[in-house]
Image (tube, helix red, strand yellow):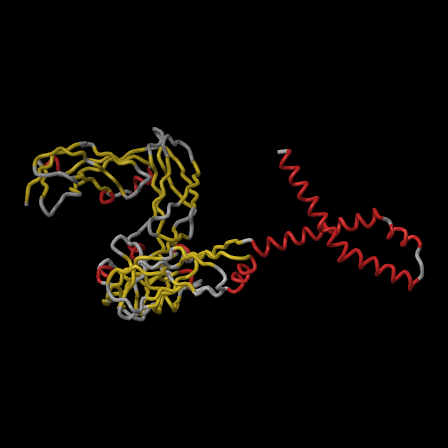
Length: 456
């Protein structure tokens, strides 16, 4: 290590001596003559004269100038002789071929250009922005080919390398087919919750798709992509959306790229409506109240709600049920419940309800000979018969407050047996009883009956 340092020091000593001699002849001596000339013409300056004639001062100036010159020359040499490289990433590859007759597979969209050369040339290359990659296929026909990507190289002093430089491409004959156009609506959740898209009409029903035969066989559907965000719809009405993008999909719903679709876009007319329906709230008590107590009244502060959604969904909804747990209840109580939004409903006028339940002393009343009905039987295959006359009617005990019992009629009570999933034969099934007033409790004195199921 010491030998290496000594060699370096000797090299710099020799370099400084050479530079000192050069600077002494070129810079120091002319400057000294200039100083003496100025001194002779302006008048003698004793202090300046002494400093300038001092050997040590001249030595320091010479060394400083030599060091500065060394640094400048050294950096200059590096800038002029050092070779560097830059990478121009993701440069577009321009393909030249007969687009009406052929389809080309295997061409990369972009490639990288590596340029090597002097810094000054590389800097100029970066500033020019005139870099073009070309794949000329005009002389090639159907089949598999290996071709080179060409680079225009605007600065011929630089050495270029293309990645990839040589690629394998396949040229197919282009064919076309007619396909029915459908619609796909995006971002429907961004539409105002009280609005729905009732219809979308396109300015054409069919489009032409072009590519090679094997690729066209993969196309399962072509859809116009209607984006709700592009409508800027704030109220019901008719909106026109131009330049709607068309996309081809395979059977799994994956987009197939590089399919030519003619035309590329369509115009869509979107009709937005605000269908609604007012339905009542039906409060259903769940559980058994305390013994000796009965529900006298159930009063919600919201009697009905307005629902917004598709018309087909609204038609299937006749009421909104809200359950309250009255297990062990013996005194008046107020409930705060959430109204659950039905499936398919976009918005409701109310989402919460306050329910007041009042309690009174329980009494009972018996209703005789309530007819039993058979429910949920597959009537396309079977019919059901009671095994005896006692299995056609039941006596029902109804418990509740006297004021409600006095208003109840036998027609308000429904006794039935559930025959779902049952087949031919004699079966014993439990008797179930419901009533029009959910504040009352219904019990059949006959718990089980025999039913005969026969094939039609």
